[in-house]
Amino acid sequence: MRDEYDVVVVGGGAAGLSGALALARARRSVLVVDAGDPRNAPAEQVHNYLGREGTPPAELYAVGRAEVTGYGAELLSGTVTAAMPEDGGFAVSLADGDTVRARRLLVTTGLTDVLPDVPGLAERWGRDVLHCPYCHGWEARDRAIGVLSTGPLAVHQALMWRQWSDDVTLFRHTGPEPTDEEREQLGARGVSVVDGEVVAVEATGDRLSGLRLADGTRIAREALAVATVMTARSAVLEKLGLEAVEQRMGEAVVGTAVPADATGATAVPGVWVAGNIADVSAQVIVAAAAGMRAGAMINADLIAEDTRRAVAAAARPR
Image 1 (cartoon, rainbow, N blue to C red):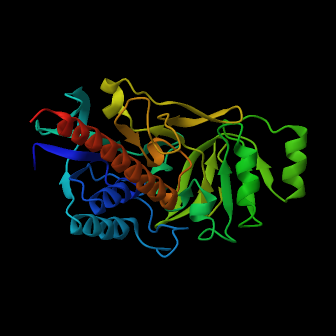
Image 2: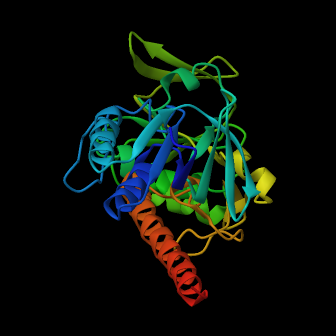
């Protein structure tokens, strides 16, 4: 590694690699530090990514790493523990004790999905325990789908999943009682409602097979939709004074994200964010686009600084 880079990218997922690619192609010195734990690691495929539909996440990232290094960027497997302002740039501390310096930072560490606490659920996450119908709806089409209610958006979620299957059941679990209007909507769409708390997600072999209620009742299901709390991985930004804030959909808190403008620029000059750390709803292709846009804006910011320096140097007496 060098001692200093134009840009250190924290996180090597779709947003980070896309940003690094734009910067490397702009002939910037770039270091990507990646901890190797992408949010979508449990998923078998990436969907709605034009030209890469159905690609396994690991394969997508491997191709991206090869493209990035092909333009001269460097990759480092490791964890960034903190970043601090230093001499107009940033000192980036690594878990192994090393420190590198950067003129600009692009943080793309993503988010963590906090799952409902139901035995057997976490083991099926990303396979047949699902969150986003746009990510997994086609694969679950025409199957017996359950929706686990844990908050006020459960009815909305059940009506969404009804687009992909006519066999959808809303499990009340710990969620609120549907209103009369919501029950009318669910009934009109053929979505059944089951009262009682779910105490186990059961599998037969390597497939989800049903949900067990507190009274012992077992209801067969082939897929289960859940709402996670999408929590930004923002600890690396704390010493810079940047904190994640709650994200709401209606009255429901769905997670946290680091505030930024449309280009990914944060309130701290020189620091950009992209991907799920800034946008809880961003799918892979959206995260990649955000990373590319942030990379271009970082390069523009560096060009402005380089120009100011050049003008000042030219003005000095010789």
